[in-house]
Length: 223
Image (tube, rainbow, N blue to C red; front, side, top):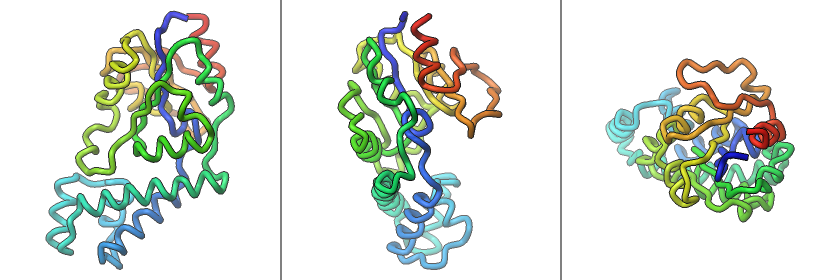
């Protein structure tokens, strides 16, 4: 194997993606706690997945409700982590086959996710995977972290710095993961899960296009 390190995304790669109800409940509870009991569609989706410009959402909630949107968002993030733990406990969010084997590669490994830092630690910890990686990076529960999501390579670069190498490959399940790897100057692997069967790439193509972690492992063993 020609790489000195392998970095993985979490959701959709090592573990299943988060169920929709997790986002729904976190948004609803955060809005209710902020006194927004009958949110508009715009308001609900702004809190659910920040489907809005952060500055515009901040101005809107302050003007319409007198609500500090960054504080609301931080509360939503904490609730989102708690609900993910519930999903894991209900077996509604579990590991993919060969997830444990991904940590047994003969090189250091890490995780860089757009999920929250506490969620990364909590979810991987529930499956006894957290301590098998050299380092874990997720987002802080802060609105300012929005701009640090992939394809921004900031956390991928930090992980590579901790691993002490640029000779690495990043494994993801979205075009934004492939773009993040490109932006960080490293190779990429796209795990084409059933939900991503028809995914195409408008810009950067992945170095590897595989259908499982086992296939990825076999591919890099032959590289």
